[in-house]
Image (cartoon, rainbow, N blue to C red):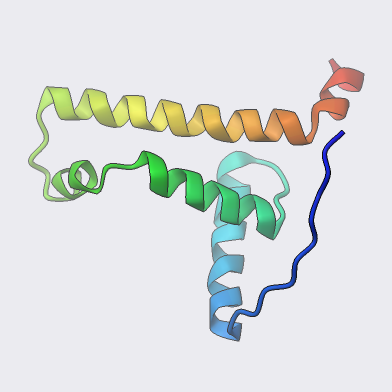
Length: 98
């Protein structure tokens, strides 16, 4: 059983609007409903996985074959993290529909 701790955090109206924009974008990207908790968790995991130097080099378009391969692996890892989170959260739905 998963135990959840409810906590209220104060954020500005502008921050909530930004978080909502990210939520909508991620729902479209992942093709499923998300909570604000999901969005915050995804953003934290993505920030831990990403190497900002690689992303800056990609933006500058100075991309070698090795760098493209690293970026591809990074995206695969990120996708796997998100899929695992989704499976854990909605496991009972998968058991009944599969």
